Length: 201
Ligand code: FES
Ligand code: FES
Image (cartoon, rainbow, N blue to C red):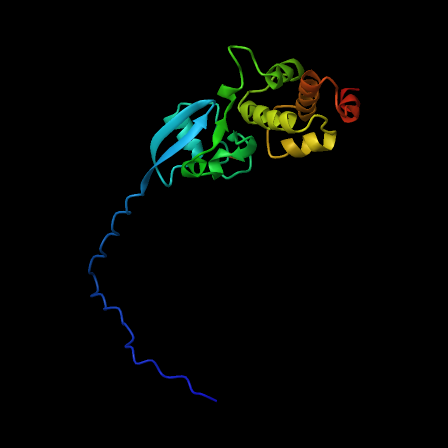
């Protein structure tokens, strides 16, 4: 069997620090590489300088002034920061702004058309009781994504879609009724209403 050759490289031994000698402060962090974010937000083209560490949440809120994108848990668990990226539900706290290059982003500010509320907004207004409103933008966008992609969602599909929104004040049943109502308004039928009828009794 061939024997492994012993390395001839010398082991690097760190120099011993004299007792009482000050530790040198860590060097300042390297500047984050700058770049540009080019995307379409609520139908308007955006072209902004942005460093590679900026989250989409901060970019939308602080750069573009879109206050409906809320920061809750900041780790993808509460759904408050939900936006639509190319029609898909995305937590903006978990995405970097630079990853949004070339995409189309929708926030609640982009739902209404010429001061006419979107059908999911009017449905939720009609169906929900009082809530503080903090999570409502994210809920609306998740509901919109479902209504856009599924003409006849079942109760399970609605609950699955809304499962990523941890909201203690908005009633789940009310949001489900709102989704069914919006589906009926858009497609002309009520989808699977069995579960929500049970909830109302
Ligand atoms: S703030 Fe993004 S999921 Fe909670
Ligand atoms: S709307 Fe108030 S906590 Fe969710």
